[in-house]
Image 1 (cartoon, protein in one colour):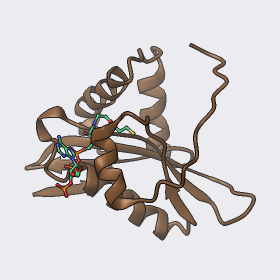
Image 2 (spheres, protein in one colour):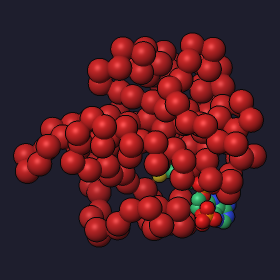
Image 3 (spheres, protein in one colour):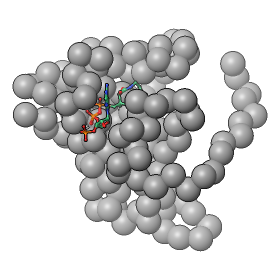
Length: 146
Ligand SMILES: CC(C)(COP(=O)(O)OP(=O)(O)OC[C@H]1O[C@@H](n2cnc3c(N)ncnc32)[C@H](O)[C@@H]1OP(=O)(O)O)[C@@H](O)C(=O)NCCC(=O)NCCS
């Protein structure tokens, strides 16, 4: 059975493994202090938020998200990171995490939940096409750090 809830102090090693796996998926190496900084921010709970998904008690998925103002509506919730353990995929964990972030965002009076993905991330898009609208925006970036 899948359960989604806050990350607890004991989750740190399993969370770190998932977050590193997520960054590896994108071919990124995390800066040395990034894990510590994100973990600290989640527990302060002001700027960055996280939920974890458990399957039979083991942490198998993570969602990281944040809230930002909007010029045209109440605050928006941005889902920045979503990752499930390769061994637990296709069992509804990703969907359960999105549902839980949506519930969180509604409870915090956000006007919407949104996220980006790569056009060719077909696996993720199979899920996303079932739970959200693709409104056709594309993203541009000017990176300041590699
Ligand atoms: C994208 C990701 C989070 C999905 O997680 P997941 O736990 O496998 O997702 P779910 O089991 O909830 O999948 C829900 C739907 O997606 C589709 N799907 C997901 N994985 C699938 C797979 N391996 N094969 C076929 N369909 C799949 C199914 O249509 C499924 O719908 P269903 O429940 O009606 O059958 C996971 O594959 C992942 O972490 N990928 C690597 C990182 C990544 O791409 N993150 C997202 C970046 S934006």
